[in-house]
Length: 249
Image (cartoon, rainbow, N blue to C red):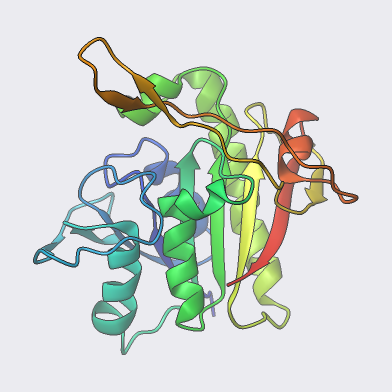
């Protein structure tokens, strides 16, 4: 029997990556989707502590799908403790994220990773999948527009690989409290090398720029990578490899 997978994400139900990801995973598994009703990136494992969380069924290409008026961690927690408490998934899969999720401590800021951490805390096999973009970032992340044909081919290849990787991973014992964090390069294809890595260790830098009004706006930045003996996720992506790491939480 096909495994049962729960998809969560931080890009929300309108993510242009989500239909591709869900369809590819549905080729190898029974899929349900519980994702934020709107984009919820860069909030880590935050919860809606001071507000009620609305959950609505949504029509989504025939999938069992809910849109949650909260955070990625809200999605995972509510799904596992309420919606699917009796129909427990075999694994929780977060993604496919629009953009990379690499390096400590920035990885802990990711809503994609935060949802995977939440699932791992419940004891479920947990995966986080992300894809670096060099073009179309604003189109995909900020405006959630449809995917151009050249990008779609790479996203589809990454999603197909993710589906295969999940199934193969679940055939072996999965350590409790572990997240498998996977990143794909922008030009990923069926023959792209897939390397084991470790999260890069980065020094922190300022993430805000002062604007003309005297206020501060978020601006993504990476600090200096600290030297490590093993291949890091950033190094792997820079070399054009897809990569995966095990992170205990």
